[in-house]
Length: 189
Image (tube, rainbow, N blue to C red; front, top):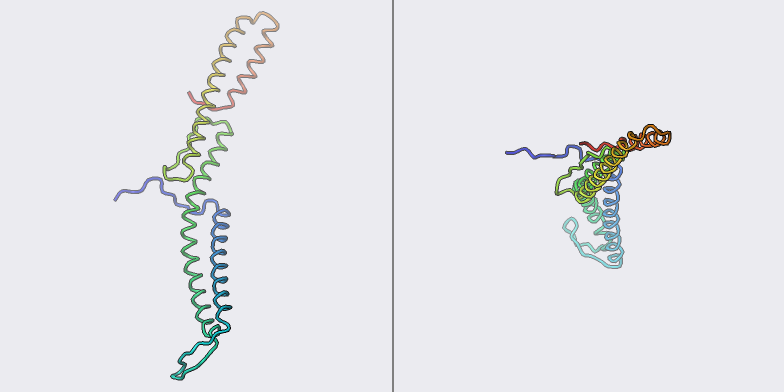
């Protein structure tokens, strides 16, 4: 059996986002069950049901007869469906939160000037298209910065030839400042 590559080990990456997502969905589920139970109870209040209790025929109010069963089945349903929902939502939200976390972290590194960074996500991840756009953006930035750096180097060669004049010294200082600003970015070679 082959080991699965790039498998995530931590399913709670953005705990607040995932926790709120699970809580809200479970709350809606509970609200739906309470609403349907209440409607069933209210519609059955004016009716009577015949039943056998301890081998005796009894006539009871339908709402009172179904209430214990309704409460018990609703509680069991709420617990089981909430657990299943929490697992499914945790898995689905992880497919969003995991790549989102990776894109956020990579964007911070790119913002710090590292244009050699490539965001690598699985092709099945929800954010794969966004990662591709980020990668294209960094490639475009790197291309333009390398072009600026080349032009700055050419300018430096011309300024070195004019070094004897006072204005040339000022231009050389400006060129040095430009180079310093450009060197902030890591563009590789």
